[in-house]
Amino acid sequence: MSRLPVAPKPPLRRFHQARWDEPIVFELSTPGSRGVGVTGPDPAIGEPNVTLPPVLARATPPALPELSQPQVLRHYVRLSQENLGADFNIDVGQGTCTMKYSPKINEVAIRDARLIDAHPAQDVADAQGTLEIIYRLERMLAEISGMDAVSVQPAAGSAAIWANVSMIRGYHAARGEADQRTEIITTAFSHPSNAACAKTAGFTVITLQPDANGYPDIEALKVAVSDRTAALLITNPEDTGIYNPRIREFVEIVHAAGGLACYDQANANGILGITRAREAGFDLSHFNLHKTFSTPHACGGPAAGASCVSAALEPFLPGPVVVRDADGTFRLDADRPLSIGKVSPFYGVIPNIVRAYTWIMTMGAEGLREVAEVAALNNNYLAARILAVPGASMGYPATPDRVEQVRYTWQQLADETGVTTEQIGWRIADFGTHYWTSHHPFVIPEPFTLEPTESYSRAELDEYARIVAEVAREAREDPETVRTAPHRQTVHQAGDEDLDDPDRWAVTWRAYRRKYFGEGVTP
Image (cartoon, rainbow, N blue to C red; front, side, top):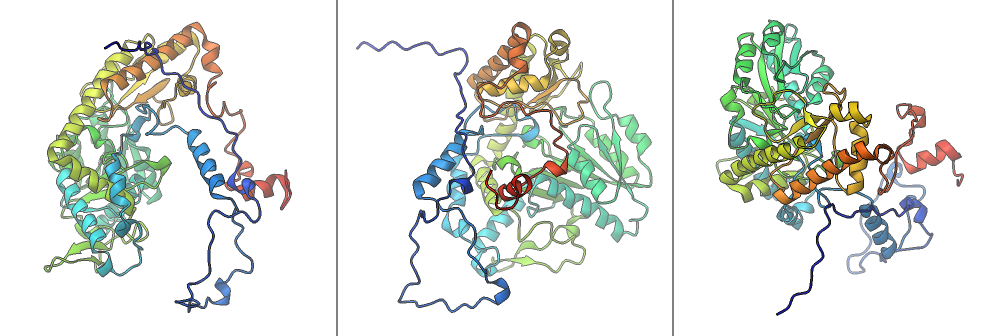
């Protein structure tokens, strides 16, 4: 049987982003258009027996857009075509966001009507399934971290850090040392939220700089600790991808000074099932469920965090906590005098809690360890491909024990061509994928951070490496194409305007119209 000839696959994927120049939905509105015909009350039921207080009743109907169903469908499909996302492209260039494929079974689970239609204020007797999922997820995360108790109430990773900082403050206050323990130590390459939350809570922040190999400087830590030390907040692996093999020594130094040790495990994807916070001696830790446990990052939210603590810190957990009574029923326990109180409305981001629970149950203990092993393998494989590109190198001369991500530098390429890492990122978007530099300030010159999780095949890593190599070639042979990119995206470069000027902000469409065109004036 003869077979039709197959054209060879192009070396790089052909890509051009859709550009619809789509108006805002309010501007598509046509008075009288309807997507659904809404009838009055069922005659068998009669008029609803509800009377709103006058203060709650609207004087005029809400100014909602009026569109037909096809208009709504086209509008949002077009907007989706103007975006890049985890379901569209190879997104290993999302830096420290730990973007991975979220299996669709997670979506099937959360779309069960008994979950998605539940109201957060309904009686706990009618929410036993949801409470059981919370309870079981917290027990699993306790096992994964080695900690004794967990709260998944925090609505994001930073919220979990804030919860941990608040518990640190509460712990020292309960011991009568709140006025003495006023300093928190962190590191330059820990997540910036660690320092931000500590500062917001009123602590003085001491930041350790890296040593010659990129590790946090342990000698600087010895100088920094004192009887004023409240805690060490440290990410490991750090945002450079470097795993600190002396992490237990760091913890012991802080403990010797009377402080607590708090483990930021937002980068835990490469160490699941291999090492735990417990074995390193930590008192508190946190996970990002929207990273490590496969729930969507969702463009900055809704996310989900988990605060994990030792038995000594358990009384301070955010409340209320989900407990299981002897008869097997679940309830919310708010009778906790030392609790730091709520850190999220109701009980966290239930859709992402369910997604994380589903993912862990699907993976099992062996699967979680395999995640870490494959993520580390993918990282090291991609590193070998990237370091073969002329002009790319590691952010540090030696980066041993790297796990899950690497922060590279284009310093040599920039010196030779004048093309910067940000310009390379603009051009990589023309190939339909992501690229990330690093947190500012650029401590590593001309940085870029790549993080292949376990989700990616070797073929996908090869494709991403070919894109990086192609843009680096263009930087040498056709630098103007790179500097003026993107050329095949929805939008091109922003101007040089000062975007930090609040007088220029307009966070809603109506605010924009008021600010620039006057109230009710059509541009």
